Amino acid sequence: MCGIIGYVGNKEIIPILLEGLHSLEYRGYDSSGIAIHEGNSLNVVKAAGKLNCLEEILKNNGTKNGKNGHVNCGVGHTRWATHGEASDINAHPHFDRDEKIAVVHNGIIRNYQEVRENLLKAGVHFVSETDTEVIVQLISYNFKNSKSLLHAICTSVNELDGSFALGILFKQEPDKIYAVRKESPIIIGMGENENYLASDSATLSLFVNKIIRLGDNEIAEITKDKVKLYSFKGEEIKKSPQTVTKSNDFLDKKGFKHHLIKEISEQADVISNLLSNHLSATSKDKSARVKLDYINLNPDLLKNIDRILILACGTAYHAGLIGKFVLENLTGIPTEVQFASEFLNTKSLLTKKSLVIGISQSGETADTLSAVKKAKDTGTTFVAITNNPHSELANLAKDHLLISKAGIEVSVAATKTFTAQITMLYLLAIYIAETIGSKKEKSLDLLKQELRLLPQLIDQTILRAEQYQEQVLKYADKPDFVFIGRGINYPIALEAALKLKELSYIHASGYASGEMKHGPIAVLDPKVPVVSIVVPGETYDRVLQNSMEAKSRHAPMIAVAVDGDKKADSIFDTVLHIPPVIEIASPFLTVIPLQFLAYYIAEHLERDIDQPRNLAKSVTVE
Ligand code: G6P
View 1 (cartoon, protein in one colour):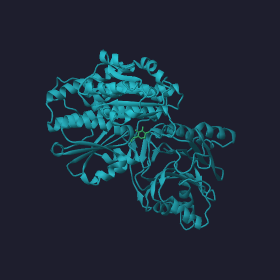
View 2 (cartoon, rainbow, N blue to C red):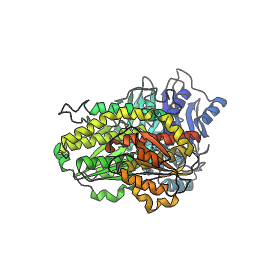
View 3 (cartoon, rainbow, N blue to C red):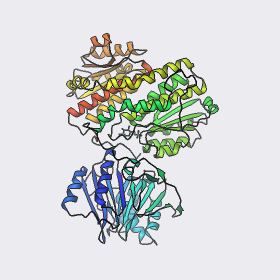
View 4 (spheres, rainbow, N blue to C red):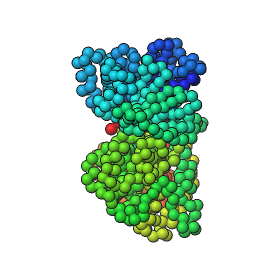
């Protein structure tokens, strides 16, 4: 989704804005632009397409970097089109009629048509199709009757309905950026005699190690050596900065062709770190319970929990489905998983005895935040799992926070953050089971022992990448794929289908394998490969049986199966082997060849792997 960067300080500004915009590229975008103070005017340059289109214009039109040593001030933006196609005109920043105010925006203005009509009646002329333009025109309109721009901003934001993070420049104040937050994230980065503004803390960590998260309904006035915060009523607010680790190498692909393949390859290390942080090295130490540092759940409270609800979107939702399986298995507490955007329906079922788990890699997904806020209003206990400790979700969780610590994930499609999320869900399930005594210590010890083996097994699976590549490329011309799995591997079938769609644009569906004969089987023919996840355990025979039904319809047959599975070798045309693993721990391994399948087919089709078309990594509108 849209990304915002801002800078005020003495350094040359364009290289900083461009560096910031490159770091925001992962969010997904289709046009970009910058606005800077130049001489006595505001200079806006913008272009449809990727950042190189903007860079080309900047190179050719003589836009100045700003003089070293003088105060340079500006904002930049990557736009993911919502209202109006991706074009030069619709790209941000947007000007008011007098070109006195420039605005960049992330989010959505729900009442933009109403505001626009009122402004049109008042004689305001619009040039773009965007909802953003109404913001700048409204501020400009209200400024006529205001004592300051801050006052005009306060009046305007109170008239707007929606979610918005804004960066605002005002011609008459060439050393100042205004930032506004309502729901959509925006963070201020504080340096020595310079300050920054960005949509995420990862971008700010390129430049500074101190940040201030703007809260909901807050405004900031940022100059090079001061940050003043106000409420939407214009009252001053005080906040202390948080520390972030400065990091300027997360955009480095470290020799890999794409971030995605680098991130797939990091999974063994990510899980190994998480396990060593939360699990003792051996089961010999009987007192060695799972340790979850930022979880402060009272044992009496946990013993009373009668229902768990997991809220998430996309890949995080699939992690939640695996979490349901493990939580029910270990704790016996009925667990439900809902798309955060569908949450409206069950709000009334939550009580003080419920536990709600919100999962979000970014911690900024609007649907998840909105559902979680509604759930929290019921007084339920709330735990968050996120990869971003500086996110709004982390902020909402306060005492009950699980950080998935996968490191920054740059590729839009989630891979390492998925396996990190499921690791945290397994650890949480064990933690609850240990606290409420729902499972025998011995069987928990056995599971912990299996989890400790995972990093090594994942490593061995990743080492088979080339073999998987050779095996899957013969299916790259197929227009449709069906993925099937059962039990704990049903969510992996869903995730594998999502990964293939996201990366290759090939249509794919995931099904619980028993459901195939109830409809999806109609689509099968020699052009539609069926990918079955067949791991030894309770579901094995049934998935094989369902696969046979597909084979009888002449579908090309692919399996993910363990080494030495002779039955699978004889039934399927292609077997993507994984090391032997017990069923309950198997999703950590079964997902890997399927991530590779999606990657290699997409690479063969020359897709934009790290930034697939139409997708955004952090979806900050509902
Ligand atoms: C977007 C991304 C997906 C992601 C989903 C949820 O749709 O493209 O990769 O799974 O949002 O994101 P979250 O940050 O909440 O996990």
